[in-house]
Image (cartoon, rainbow, N blue to C red; front, side, top):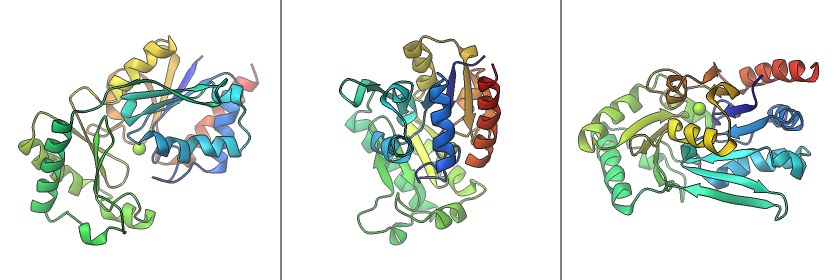
Length: 260
Ligand SMILES: [Mg+2]
């Protein structure tokens, strides 16, 4: 019996960059009620975890006791937040940020690569939006910015070919970093090892569980995808195409748990 359900966020719990739908929120609350620990792990920043996941759970009726079973592994788990029921707020347990110099180097490599390949879409950005974002523990390239429409994002690079080309060139320009493809238009740049293995290793430590206790859900489990490192660790993984697949699997898990 698994004790921990861990989830990629974009495309696994939601439509990329949007709040989780009611169905997923209700199923996650069901899991929290059943005593399962729920651990989203994604390249997103903390405020996005609040908007996309936590606020939705609260709206759907999650109690403080249930939130205490929710563990947020932000920026691929290089930051970890835990709910403090007394304060009714989140405590940051740890954080491993990049240095300013590393951020500058990555930013330059990705920007140069995208411009050389004609994939630098600055003219398509909405006001105040940006293509490259410093997320403290990682630098993230979002081809059309954070605020672009979902439809445009899905259409931009459905076969990952554009991003694979950018990654290849950026790796030549700044080989000391790792570049992972995630979401619909994103590339996450990190220092080697600061991927989901780092997050997952800390998750096991912090929650005092073993690999066998964890079931992971992700949509990018293929080699090169940002969920692949979890598969390589030997953690049981369910590959999903969308949050609909995740909902289907969670219904099965909850049915099973409730019948015990
Ligand atoms: Mg994903």
